[in-house]
Image (cartoon, rainbow, N blue to C red):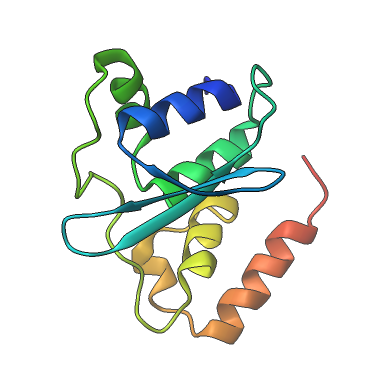
Amino acid sequence: MKTPTWDEILEFLRIDRWTRDRATGRDFFEKVLPNGEILQTHASRSGDRTISPGRFTSILADALRVSETEFWDVLRTRDPATRPSRSPEPPPASLPLWLVRALERDAGLGLDQITELDEQAARTLLDATRSRPPE
């Protein structure tokens, strides 16, 4: 997976018409979607430093709400992302979004498998997945 630099993340935010919310040690941005949902993110001022694949995947899913392909298309075409995007369908209502995304990303589960879990079982499975030694 090709990962962007922080400068490319900032360029995506500019093209996708995010607004700067506040500046501290990092820059905070938000975007109001046509349905009224507010997306928020922040970006490092590390400029040309490349983002790790795991962090990039998390930023795409949790903050920007676009696919990897859509992210690169925005930078290539200079056109804002189309929303709603082709991002995964919403998680089951009984589990927090972060937990569903983590199970998809870290445990490799599909939504059909995740919907069968209650929150305690989902957390236990995620903890077990994350505590396994690397292969």
